Amino acid sequence: MGLYILISVLILIVCVLMILVVLVQNSKGGGLASNFASSNQYMGVRKTADFLEKATWTLSVVLLVLSLFSIFVIPKTQAKAEATQSEIQKQIDESKTAPIKDFQAPPTQKK
Image (tube, rainbow, N blue to C red; front, side, top):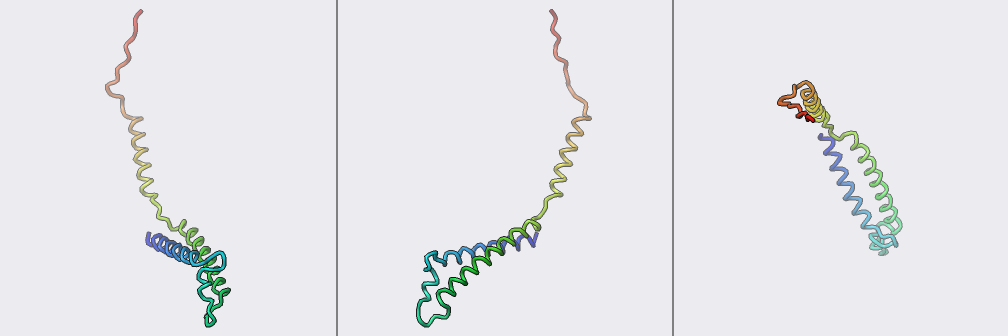
């Protein structure tokens, strides 16, 4: 159960990061990359766009892997399902073996 919660939290963090990275990007070449157009920039406009694109692809792959891994750590409630199934089976068995009480035959019609 603890690993499932950890994977779920990681998926949520990756989703929030991906949302932020996608919102920073601008499909027309603007976004965060356009803010670094000064001459004393640390990274060029193209390098910033490349970084954001690589971050988007990396986060999408991480989200895919975490989602696939979460399938294997989902807590199974098999014990509860088996208990419910055995209860149903017990009621069916009791109904088959229990005598029919207060059964009255339908009245016969005389002509």
